[in-house]
Length: 150
Image (cartoon, rainbow, N blue to C red; front, side, top):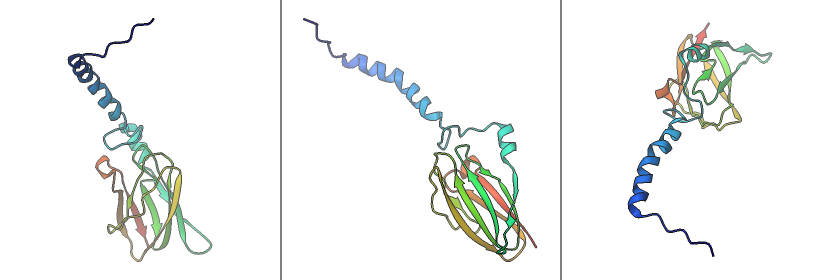
């Protein structure tokens, strides 16, 4: 008849737990400081992500642009160029990390989940530079600018 395994002594369990804890915590850290797989971005990747996009003017007089967010904790493009008037930004979350965009003036947009998109309708009456960010990841530099010209 096989022998029944003896339970591990309490002292040994503490020792094993103390050894395993740093490895478990290191595994959680692979998601980066603010979450999301691959959220760490090298300097070269950050420079490449600092892209510009120009809103396209539709036949209805509304400008439109797609703004992508993903697990790299960056907006792409990070600079949106448009003219005064109505602007629709389609916020497309292509990763699995949730984001919540804060619009110029501090108004929040509904949180996004991976694989979803939503249209954000704005209107700009005067030229200027307007900043936006992700409420969850602003500490990681997840921010952008809308540059409006006449």
